Length: 234
Ligand code: CTP
Ligand code: CA
Image 1 (cartoon, rainbow, N blue to C red):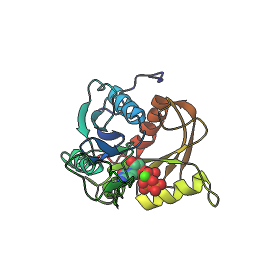
Image 2: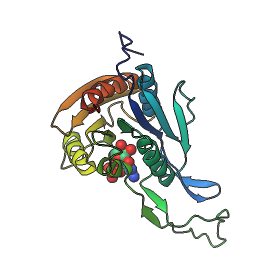
Image 3: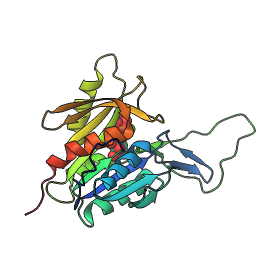
């Protein structure tokens, strides 16, 4: 870990992290998915455990090895991720939750129980999609306990009308979370790579630039920002 001091500053805290990318089955052999590797979520789980937290990692379709000293829950679909995140953040109530997973936004309306076959006439099937639930929004709207800190991630490119930062601020407000780590896509960041550069936006108006560095470094900056926002009981 890239920390000079091995401060156990998260001791006594329960944190839940999601990682990886969910997959929505089309039939027994095919799915709709995405390229999330799970590395950022695993880095968050590892760093939190190293800093003394009790960590649950809910992981979707990642091939990475289980971090030591972390409870690992495996899920496949966005619906399974939602169920696992609600359970892990409430029972018992977590102090912080970070949605680093990339949930599939859509699922096929129906999953075929047999393998979909090609037609002889060259035609192709039409796949009808439904939108999946927004887990981060739900976690923020229905917190496991008062003062539970809720953190999201967003990979943005900016578009013709709005900058990455404007899109990030709008997403933070829409999600209702406390912190949103916004990755700049297209300058060596995000998916699959081992390095990330980001700005972490806070619902209190704060903004923290994280220069390009390892996913471990971004993870440690995030825990640094989460810690003072946790409202401890008593
Ligand atoms: N997220 C979630 N549930 C979903 C989709 C996204 O909890 N169904 C979470 C992600 O884990 C991430 C944050 O929301 O922490 C932002 O994800 P992103 O894909 O950027 O947001 P979306 O609301 O899906 O918007 P977009 O249309 O830009 O994909
Ligand atoms: Ca999305």
